[in-house]
Image (cartoon, rainbow, N blue to C red):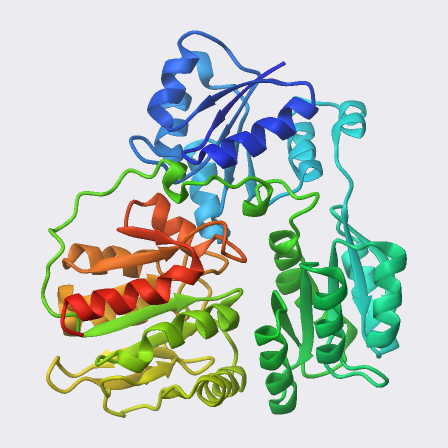
Length: 487
């Protein structure tokens, strides 16, 4: 059998091709729709996998052209993309795809899609698929452990390898079960989650850990401490203990995050295949207004998964010398952002606080968008101020970085410096486009240092980033730009 793999990212193509080769496919690769059409002129594959966002010709245009050609109307097409919103997936189906698979994904999920397409049968999948993601659950509540176990086990890509009732038991269970990820409660007797996390980092290196915390002020404070201590991500528990409510939260919030965080046994995750050159994804820079060399008047930052540790590294490197406001959207619920601001201010002596509606924007201050509210810049460049709104979410987020970035451009235009750090999804992409169109510039975190290369990856693939840097260099680069351009 033959497959044509179409993706502008060379690492992504290699990952998909490797998974297909394990299922006995011979693979041809193409970096965009135009290259795919050239490949199809000389060979007929049994299936095509196609990314959505690519330069030259994107996946949607490729699919439409194929469906207009009599020879390719019945060719099985599987779209593999970071898009996750249902209306976007519906648009892809209208264009003519047969099946859709969201990145990141496991090899077994890819294999099942090929079965659904009729390209493979169940016997072939049984021979070719990799094992599920092994998850260890640590929570002192028997009810929560039971609901988590049942809901996670219902997903064929996940296997619950064990449970523990406190941090001490968790450490023993890790040694016994070798999980791919630990789902760790924050507040527990005997040994709490924060103490356990520190021991996990000491004994088991970079084993992915996701905190499962209560949506209270106390839980928020402990979770922020855990994130700064090295936890990869967190999910807030529902306020009540209704089984259906907890199960739904697990299905909607936890499972996708687990698949994004686990490097081993996961296909399409950045840590499986890294290029030394962060620009190797093949992004073609978009035509843009010439970057102005006027004085930078504001730095706007978008960050999500892995954000607290990223901010703790980036902000101290430039904020003490900055003479412009630094505005941050970190995807977090209420309570959490206030504690994060407090912790960053206390730990590093930085002027970090949660944004307050109507407050003037002070040079050298760092403001975090409060959880659950959009953060905008109002007024004008001479007297900018904070505006908080309850407008509908964008990119399934409130606060959304796109909202902040667009408002910054309205006030400062090309004097805006955008920074997009680690995080799931595509928030920040539309805002980065607005900054670049106005003549501003955008820095993106590279793939290797990101916990999840979703948000910065979207910006890089769109050709919007004029610098793609490891986390350790971003703060220094911001500082240098502020020095050169008067900020």
